[in-house]
Each structure stands twice: as C-alpha cells, then as structure tokens.
Image (cartoon, rainbow, N blue to C red; front, top):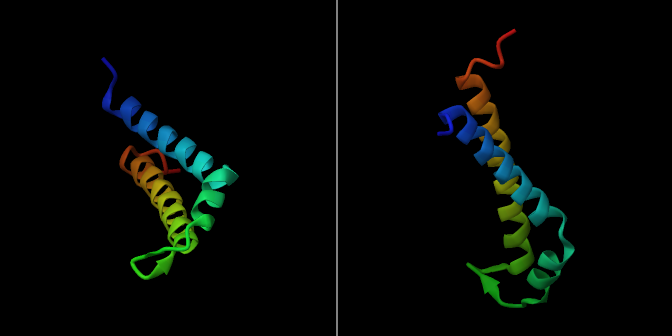
Length: 75
C-alpha cells in the first residue's frame, strides 16, 4: 500500500505533467482562440491563459507547501 508521502509526490508529479501538456500543447490554445463567445464576459483565450497560469502557480505552491510540511526545506 502506498504511503501518504508517495501519494502526495504522485499527485504533484501528475499535476505538473498535466500543466506541461496544457501549457505547451498548441492545439488547445488554437481551439480556445477559435471561439468568439465570451466566458463570463471575457474572451476564451484570456480565460484559457488565466486558468493555465493559475493551475501552474497553484501546483508550485502546493509542492512547496508539501516539502515544507515534510521538513524537506530545512537546511
């Protein structure tokens, strides 16, 4: 049975890989840029880049928080 720490590492790595795929895969951006509808009054590309940026930022903060909670940041 996997330990809690190994599951957290798996979650962070999966989240990072998903962020890399979403941020670097051009057809996703192209699909968002073709939509002229507004999402909450904003263009779809703005919502796409904001969501990707927020996900990347939160994944980095979560990984930092997990390292700090596990005592891996102390020197």
